[in-house]
Length: 244
Image (cartoon, rainbow, N blue to C red; front, side, top):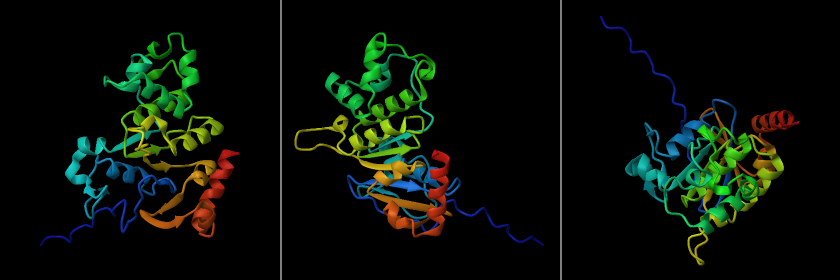
């Protein structure tokens, strides 16, 4: 006699539905294990949903595949990877990118000053995984590299955690106009911005906050509006205490 079928693990994300408008800035907030990283992986086409669909500009990510999604979405993760080469090579990854575009991207992420101060500027060799740079400098270069891909969607997954809060605020303001992604004079190419955030200052700057709880979007609105949600308010207090 066969035994009863054992139930599988519950899905990481369930009954999750949301829409982000082109050019909108959204902060996704949730406790550890709420599904934020899984959401990023789905958006980037790295994993496929077991049910439902993820659409980018009306196109199913499953139809794009990881390579196709990479042409639309540029994720920047907390642990940045820099090639053991020059700053220029790290930014361009071998693509033909003009000096003006590189300068604009570096200015957007407040990296132009420290890059200029390096011994050979853009031609300075940064060493294996960028070991000769600080964590905040590596993160800023990783964001600049993502901007140079001219993405329609820029995902920052805790990728400014090592950046000074004041500099981070300036970067986020710059990304709202994103000169490093300009395509033509009539198309400024401002990307949709999804930020996985743990700093209240970052969260407050977003047009909208998505509160992810138990694999679901538990609430959506401004930071101030979501403070009426007890679970979100408790998480916000924890972030504030951690920042202090």
